Image (tube, rainbow, N blue to C red):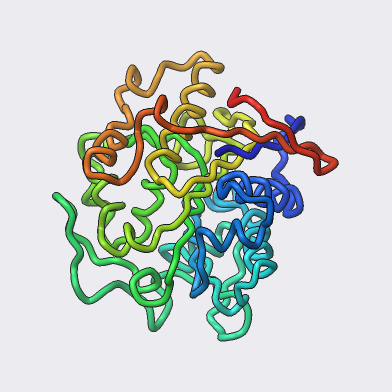
Length: 302
């Protein structure tokens, strides 16, 4: 489902409260329930919760701190202990460069990179198809359930950088998996046993879409969409993200990703190995528009 904020095209980031409103509406619509606590519990039944952010674009267009803060606040409200929440990324430097305050203490939510002392990568390799990688011990040993929390961006090789591509940040050797538009590698990274077992939700920030020039930041190619994509189907979430990305490209007179030579081929591969739904016509997409006063109404994708 998509939760969109109405109005506003100033290019600013959303506030924590605005993200909080979108998250509450999104969780309830996704769960089909009216109660926020029951809605969150349907996908996250306790334990330690990981939030895998994307910090490659530093402060310019990484997972916004207000979004992570709003999600942490919501999880706490629904009964998850703050000490059982971990915001994580590949390295501490990436987190700090995106504006996150590190915390490796036992008090409060943790925020740390895989390169933190005492963590690192798994001792054993995990394999799927041509992928053979070590996986972050934050995911394999610390987290019970993970929320994938990326930003919607163009990618110079894969075409699409969204949920599944974000999980390259959970393995030790992502540099090996960029040939042939990252296909079939993106799909098989997400099919590694710890990732497949623990990724419960994709929440994709599509507020400011980097529709060209990604995955880094290029201010010439930013479009305002003002929405979050929420799904427990990682392939469907990315397929919807692709539709938004292609729409932004079309609105700005750019060719489709396929014509640009970087189609997001990995989506069909992901579907073929059972990770989810890549056919947009088979995705039951709901869109909710949230206004500044807190009201909401059904909306359209575009």
